[in-house]
Image (cartoon, rainbow, N blue to C red):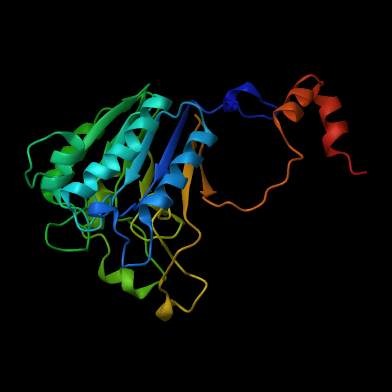
Length: 304
């Protein structure tokens, strides 16, 4: 059955989203499909994620993958990831935005995913998504796992932001400009955050999409909302003391981002096979649509 668009049913005060974006992070693919750390079947986990993406929206404006595309930066890992994502993106008619992370190697990423020369040039880009501007930044530092943005990239960003976009701008980056309650991530945090804040403050930047943490997190930076997507490979078990967190093969998720003129929402979508009820359905929505607003309140809001 085709997936209905969000705009087919509007029962509340807000108009349908002008743009819907799929935000995925940290697939950590490896050459030859081997398991990450000998434990995590990252390709199977990602395949389940792609099936969920196909189910949640028929035509997202973009699929944004915010870094750590490969675990060791191997050329075959990028080939395998590309073969997995491109058919789904083509089916959904959505561009793919590949973002570099600390586990990535720029030369192999550029050649394997972007068909560009295999250099150490930062992996950046700008997309016009029907008036919504999406800018990919490269916070990776060759040879290191912490994040940084050099003066050249910040200057480039400032020049782009000097002209506003019709629906505003989203930034996509790997290292989030947010604190973590886990001390281990302090070592690997993004450097030059003050300089980034100076560039984006009082511009049309409406949100920042990030990854890196392997758990979902949200905050603000320079007055801009930041949303960190969890990982598809494995997640950090934050239900443990901060000094004792480690990876687990559970709670994988991605986010579906709804952009409206007045607000942007980020919904965490769990990738799970858990049993699910069947009370609400397309038929239920169609029945509600045939009612007047007062009749819908009577049918669904009144306590029985």
